[in-house]
Image (cartoon, rainbow, N blue to C red; front, top):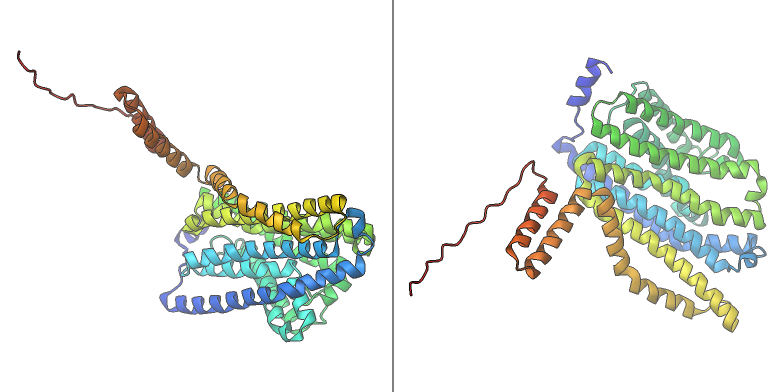
Amino acid sequence: MTTTDTRIIKSHTTEAKPSWVLVMKIAWWILAATNLALYIIAIPSEYQTQLSVAVGTYVTSLPVFNLTPHFYATFLTAMDVLTEFVFILIGSYIFIRKPGDWMVFLVAIASITFTSMFVPTLIHLADKNEAFLIPVAVIRATGVASSLIVFCYLFPDGLFVPRITRWFAVLWAGLSIYWLFNPVAPYNIVYLSTWMDNMAPSVAILFTAYASGLAAQLWRYHRVIQPAQKQQIKWFIYGLVTGLLGFTLYYLGVILYPPFGLPGLPGLSYVLIGVPLLHLSIMMVPIALAIAISRYRLWDVDLIINRSLVYTFLTALVILLYILAVVVFEQFFHWVMDWDESPLAIGLSSLIIAFLFRPLKTFIQERVDRRFYRKKYSMDLAITQLSHKLRDEVDINRLADALLSAIDETMQPEQISLWLREANIPSKEA
């Protein structure tokens, strides 16, 4: 990298001017509230859409797996809601933590709107009620434009690196606006009608666009100066590659083997296996962003991400265990008592999840601290062990060893010594 590039990166700041902070906050809350309200309103319509698909498309194939249409609808709706929850949670927390940074503002917007591109919840809402068509289209167009420009061309410091990416950004923003105002435009990912009709070239266009973003991040990675920023980019590249590959491979399977997209057992199998893998790969984008924040202090908002990681993993695990418990109990009651759908299965599953919630939270918190906050975890563990020693131990030498060990583990000094003052007890003469 040249000397000029070094000076620019070191002097660059993304702190917004005080006069713009209020504008950013208002814009954020309007977009976030609209986005969240649309998703909440869309959950019933999403469930009904998935139920209609199950009844109309896979009704003869579901019994092969001993599944019901209601389970199919619940499972896919839960996957959509979980994916949306992860993106909205990460985006909301980083903006609330640091609202005066315009790069954080852009990343937060990209995060909460990104999921609208890959999760069909809002599309199903607009299909059932045309009153929501325009706000859904605006949210999706924002996600289409910001996800590539912000995540790929500007992340993490707000600079277009390499500089040619600014022209790619202008082209992609213009294309997103064109799609927004022209629903019948070719390969329109905002409204999806022409996109689905020409899936092969549509996927190729989207893949090429994000491949250019990946190339930009790789170029930045090999020419970046700060080691911490290099680590941030490395994690984000990992998340971006995982999400891009998952999306491409999922739709490539439908293109290469059309029965995967048709009614029947192959199509149902592909949905039950492919959709969870697709959602998991897409969720790697915000998870990688969270790791970049938590481990390498991206934008100095790592404290709040600790809770985000814990509750994201906890929510995913609880949903997975709940679905698994419902399936197991329904199969048990079907075999033993010949009940096809038992409320008792749902009740028992809910009781089990309620009983396991706190132990699961403690377990996940310990693993997150140990993996991403190793220094804090070791310090807390050493202090806890020392407090137990002080309460139970009476031998002065063992107490001294425990104290020295705790100081060494938490502070890691080059040298350490302990001086104990001897008590001067006056002797009594006989």
